[in-house]
Amino acid sequence: MVNEMNLEEYKGVFVFAQQVDNELSSIALELVGKGKDLAKDLGAEVTAVLIGSDVKGLCTELAEYGADRIIVVDDPELKEYRTEPYAHALAEVIKKYKPEIMLIGATAIGRDLGPRVSARIHTGLTADCTQLDIGDFPINPVPGKEQKHNQLLMTRPAFGGNTIATIACPDFRPQMATVRPGVMQKAPRVAGAQAVIEEFNPGFTPDNKYVEILKIVKAVSDIEDIMDAKILVSGGRGVGSPENFKLLEDLADAIGGTVSCSRAVVDAGWKPKALQVGQTGKTVRPHVYFAIGISGAIQHLAGMEESDIIIAINKDETAPIFDVADYGVVGDLNKIVPMLTEKIKEARAQK
Image (tube, rainbow, N blue to C red; front, side, top):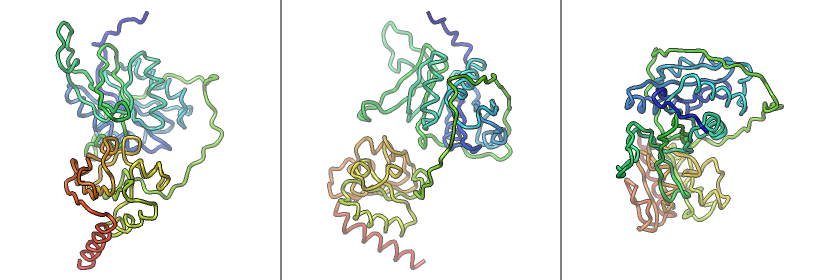
């Protein structure tokens, strides 16, 4: 029998401020930004939970990106990410401070940490969210059922991205979600902004569940992170062949962009997974997104529809990509892309 939770005791929006090698991950700052929005709706504060060893120096950055309070769990056992000590640290923070909402990035670390923590504190977890709002649940009143207010409405793709589900956790606290990186926006940085810093250490006693890390091997990649690119030239199955991607690479070089691709291209072995945009790839929001030979399945749109300007080139005028494109060209990419590249080169040469 689980004791009834006193939901009134749970207050505030907490975010797990992921750091690796004493550097904050981008998702930590994205979550602080989103946490601020949610906290404003609830009349609450946003608290960053910083877990690691000798990580106090990161508090300045968290404060300047909007954290009202920072709880630091600092211990030599937390130097590298390991499931057991990190899960213990975060679960004990939640038990002591009782947040109403707990957000974690849906990174490799967060996907491991989130479910374990939610199980320990007996609450639900919605994984891989792409949207978070405060609202009523049920969203539409149901006769004979209480409609609860100020609930966290967690939205995520479901059934392979063919539908969007909105999930709530009305009866347990905290309301927990892992959030897809690149979807939420950081708040503008305010130099000199201060946060209340609290240190908390629940004590760490290594046991047989503690993994011993023997060696860390870092993969060296010369592939640019498409999530940081301001201009993306993205190709789909319609490009036709791996060799034909040279057309897209030439355009990217001319315009100062980066090449990315759809899932079909990765599945065909033409490009590495690191360049994939979409629901099973990365979420990107560049200033300009060229969708070349991409039909625009819902799974792909989920990863790029927040781009500022979308330019689609496709020979199929009924392709769904044209529904989201700001500019569309119907025609043969083998002719259009080289012409576009030439025009951009000419324009640059005249400057």
